[in-house]
Length: 352
Ligand code: ADP
Figure (cartoon, rainbow, N blue to C red):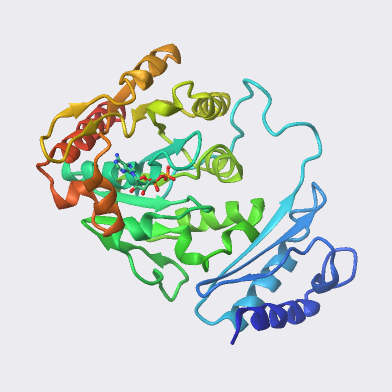
């Protein structure tokens, strides 16, 4: 059945769901668009603050009806209540209570950047493999809703399996477990996932994936700061965030914004990685500091952050990424892998 047909069919089924105060969910103005992908069905119910619990039974009923029509698809129904008072986080406000750790996961390291295209995903994946090379049990969660590239970087195909109890079985590649928000979406659909749905999708990937026992879960965040970041930092204990930047981004203004948010939310910033830092000529192996190196290192010092290391700009990193086999796996003894592994070792000492 075409996704739009299923979406319409679910909407009709929601006409049978009673909501508090009378009426049915299908005609309730707070019902979001019903998103149907090959792997998932997602919608949100916006309610007045304080009405979340009252809408619980309606949500459960809606979930049941959507599941009955959706077959093997994972159903995500979230209740959202807009708090009307001011910005979500005022400067220095404590992180809201209710953060919990993720079952089976000992540490979470998130990887962020001020803007897109700096090599954040490439760095996340290679750091994850480098941590695994240190003997750790590692998972990677691709939360970059607007540009999910982990499946491509790791050569993952198809959607993750869903167990009978609704729990995701992650993919396994190069010895790490991996799951991507991208496998839940059909191309081009990410933009229609609104804030609460993105947050709820992330929550389910995080909490309803069979991670087994992991020493570290690496989360590839979307660039910048947004709903996914706030949602994650509010609900889960994140041990620290690595910021990836390029030397061209010398003023690092975007990165600085991201760091400010992390500090406001009391999320530890583990340090800065400078990507595409210097160029290694493929023919001679000579190193060229084409951008004038050291920008990120100086910026890290200015921002009172640890400098975690520099990754060269090398064609092979791009080629390996395109081929779905990251540099750390393809050439574990090569100079690129050495750069990633040095960063991984530094991270291990930062988060024992
Ligand atoms: P982001 O996640 O920040 O959007 P990506 O990881 O998708 O960035 O990287 C953007 C592009 O840059 C990709 O084509 C990737 O292969 C390439 N790239 C990333 N890091 C390097 C590097 N150190 N050397 C060469 N190419 C790189």
